[in-house]
Length: 184
Image (cartoon, rainbow, N blue to C red; front, side, top):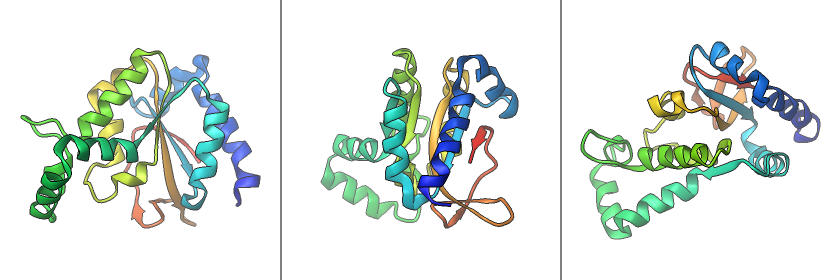
């Protein structure tokens, strides 16, 4: 389907899922999770984000691309380049949190936490920027803090839906088994 014919139903379903009176259903349908996975074709990402900004002007749109740049800036380009080359085969050592060091993963979680504390719905957008970092959407959605927040996390998920119903993230990577409400 094209954006023109598909988006109205998807956004209507998202609106129903996010209605205050339905938020408990998210946790029930998500087996205790507190996230909504909003699925759309990767080629239409900009259209879906633009429409979401129009429909949810009070939401906090957390751009993963911007968080990645902020993370790189915090390290410094030269050091980032050196670390990236050193951990080329183990990118999780560069991007994922460890016991003693906060990295890109915690930067994104802190942005979600701030949106919640500002009483805004957090919308995680441009999640394709996570590809290759070994930070999976599931790591963010099943983070203990995210699962305890009062407001759900909405994850914009560019994926192709296969004939058997399976999702392929960015059209190439099979999706994890998320504990979330699925809007597709």
